[in-house]
Length: 239
Image (cartoon, rainbow, N blue to C red; front, top):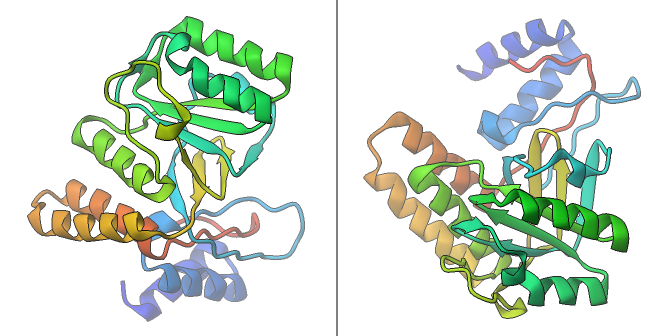
């Protein structure tokens, strides 16, 4: 829709002209609805925060990794990316030892996990008061690999395909990660690998024909260039 149409939709959805103006301005700024998240706020004020980062759908291996929290914030977490099924905790023993010694944070993204691995790491978190989070890759097929390659670029890690005694040399790191029930927000530092990945995605855009593929590619490109997250109060309806 045009600017005026979007403003009218926002005002009707929010049932308030002032809030409608705020929401429509936010949409114009981010240029992409997928980059806007609207949440309930505990006070009466409408708050808007714009943050650069990569967003993916939350797909925890177990809800117990959230520790009954609405949002889990990890500072300077290490990221381990596995394009495979993790069925043996010994494969990441070296990394776990480093995390425990340094009381660090670790996020693992893999295709799936053995139930025993999940349970062992939940117990490890509880016994040692650390955050080692197991996430299932929320995508499928070629999208699964491309998401991993994106996060590989922003974390400066190494994507693991064959699992065999993984070391800290293959682990990436980002500024912080925020996890809630719906989304995972990764705040990262721009680097040469990030810019190189952006160029790759731009080339992908030229090759796609299907609309869903194009939307997925545009969304990823947005996250690497100028992603912005919008938070507002419960008077606003998402449209």
